[in-house]
Image 1 (cartoon, rainbow, N blue to C red):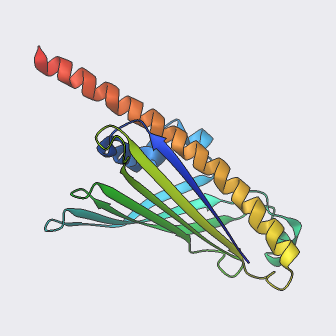
Image 2: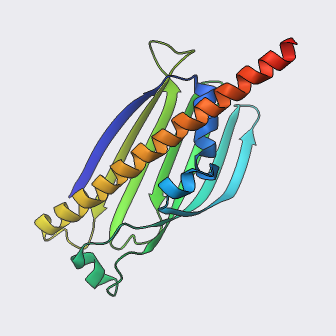
Length: 193
């Protein structure tokens, strides 16, 4: 069984500000306490295609799992939580004003597969002022596919945690957008003087 859920959020900030904030989400000093499940982030590759105006990046993200349900603990040796390595690929397409972020777990794949796909685009009603954020997450618990009720509970618990962490991430992007807006305002005031 695969559990899939989608979410949408409207940032009342322009696309360039929101995507700049999304890049800074893991580096915000205040994010470290609220996004405590994120242990480490490294940029593995970064390539700019000047002809297409696209930035391609790959990052490694290490996260701490939430407390695991007993059936999963038994499969991994009894640990209440584990570290999981994820690979995030991003394509920021400036000419089209579209950024797509895909994160997949690289660790624990024999137990669970998670894919999170996020898209940032100008909002159709206010394309120069607002940004539409769409996220789809797919979770599949592999070892229990024969035991559908256990798999369903594990997938649901994972989905609940992903929804909580996603909301925290959106809050930080909103806050960083506020910082960037304040910086832009003070820069334009200074330039006018």
